[in-house]
Each structure stands twice: as structure tokens, then as C-alpha cells.
Length: 302
Ligand code: HMG
Ligand code: MG
Image 1: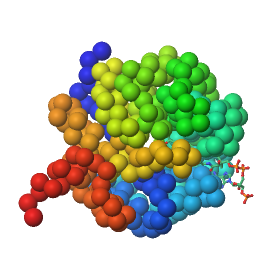
Image 2: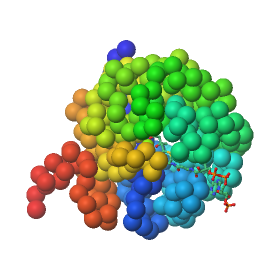
Image 3: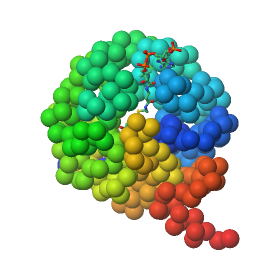
Image 4: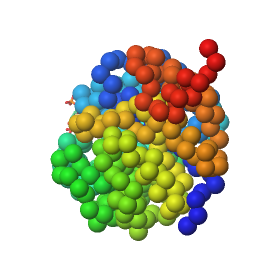
């Protein structure tokens, strides 16, 4: 398999990046972030989630954020929906794509969405049906595909099992997530191979948190497998509220730097992406988590 010449990045900063923020982030700031990301050339943005505001208060302004975005043609806007209640609310805001999210680990499934893996699939089935009937594309996120904060290492067979269940209910694409960033390249490759037993290469993506600094190495090995779609979060924002100690996703700026350095096209203007990362980092009052973002920002003439 040869390395792809073009990669699609899905920007998950406004959702995965901000969901764990303790300080209130006004809807206007989230909307401005989305605007800056699309101005930088991102063509797919995970905007928010329609989950319980008691579980994730930061996403309570989901509808307001979706309504406030000035949409650009050619950009797709996705949202997370854990159940029919979330889907019905999301649908009113006209997302291009919804994301159902399950876990390869039983314990994480319970902590994150308060049900077993099997129950989650039963819960998603009508959501998938309703979305597809409405012409909304359905992506699935598979958490803890290499490691779980509660169960430790996760075997590829469990990833394959979950991917098969996702496929069986009509999910069209799955993201293979290293939720707590413990994966190393060969483990990530095995999780991806397990997924590819059920989904085509064009229908899988990588979603790597960078807790242990392995996300770029994991991205590279997946590129070598021909995977061409990856999630990333501007300024490396984020973490999952139900995965203690897990830090943000790999920084979008770092992934773009890696890809452009390898001659792989993304359609993204790295300078504008760095500006978007700087904007949200300034708002949050802390430095960016992107190594490339920081280095390139510091090189700018004053
Ligand atoms: P539950 O408490 O079992 O739900 O939560 P329930 O059906 O028993 O309902 C209880 C209450 O929640 C009711 O309200 C419902 O109306 C309300 P009450 O009568 O008590 O006032 N409720 C909702 N409200 C708004 N929107 C909804 C909704 N559903 C129920 N959709 C539930 C189950 C799934 C809702 C809950 O566990 C939840 O919201 N979990 C979300 C967890 C989450 O957002 N985690 C982070 C995203 S996943 C992630 O980050 C991983 C990913 O990045 C990949 C990776 O890195 O691994 C994707
Ligand atoms: Mg995540």
C-alpha cells in the first residue's frame, strides 16, 4: 500500500477539544473558532455534541452554536448524537453528518454513555436508520481501540467485534480512536487492521489523542497502510471527561506540518490554522499544545 497523496483532516477541536474545558466558553467564541477553521481550509468540522448537558455541560449550547455558524459551501459540519433524543435535537440544526460513539471496552462504555456495548448498539440502530432516512451521513467513533483507562490493553479482536456491530447497523464510516493516547504504532496498526475486516480503506479514519506523544507516529503508520482520513484538534485541545488523565487530540497544526512535509496535500493553510489555534489558546489563557504551531508562531516577525 502506498502513502496517500491527499489527506482529509476532520477538525474536532470545537467538540472533542472543548468538551472537557472547565471554564465556560461562550457560544460566540466557539462560532468564531469554527469560522477561523473553515477560513483555514478545513472541509469537515465536528462542531458540537447533542449529549446530556448534565453529563457534559460545555456542550449545552449545541443548538446555538450550530445556528450561529455561517456555513461555507463544500464544508461538512458534524455533531455527536448518543441516542434518539440527541438525534432529534441535532436534526433540527441540519448537520451534514452525525456521529454515534461506542467503545471497544465494556467499562468505558458504562462510564461514557451509561450502558453496555450491546445496549449502545441497540440504542444507535434507530438513530442510524433515522439519519440515513433523512439523508444524513453516519460516522461511528470507536473508543479505546488499543487501551482503556479501566480495563488496560484492548485486544484487536474486540475492535473487530465492535466494527462488525457498527457495520451491521448501517454505520457508513468508523473512526479508530486511541482515547487515552497509549497506543504505539504496531498496536495501532493491528486495531486498524481489525477495523478493515469490516470497513473499506476509504471508510476508516484515525483519531489519536496524544497523551503519550505517540499520535504522529501512529498517524504515520496508518498513512503507510493507505489510511487518508484523520481527526485532529487545533492547538491540541481536549480530552474526554470520562477518560481521566487523557489529554487532547493530536494537534491539527502538527499533523498538517507532518503531511505537508511529506508532500501530502491537505488543502489547509497552515498559517491560518496557527492563527485559529492562537485565537482559542488566547481565549483559554494558556499556550498552544501544538509543537509546530508554537515553533512557527515564534518565528513570525514581530
Ligand atoms: P443517561 O443518564 O443514562 O440517560 O445518560 P437517560 O436516557 O436515562 O436520561 C436521563 C436524563 O438525560 C433525562 O433528563 C434525559 O432527558 C436526558 P431528566 O429527565 O433527568 O431531566 N438526556 C438527554 N439530554 C440531552 N440530550 C440527550 C439526552 N439523552 C438523555 N441526547 C447519555 C445517557 C448517553 C445521554 C449520557 O451518558 C451522555 O450524555 N453521555 C455523553 C458522554 C460524552 O459526551 N462523552 C464525550 C464524547 S465521546 C468522546 O469524546 C470519545 C471520542 O472523541 C472518540 C475517542 O476519543 O475515543 C468520540
Ligand atoms: Mg476523542
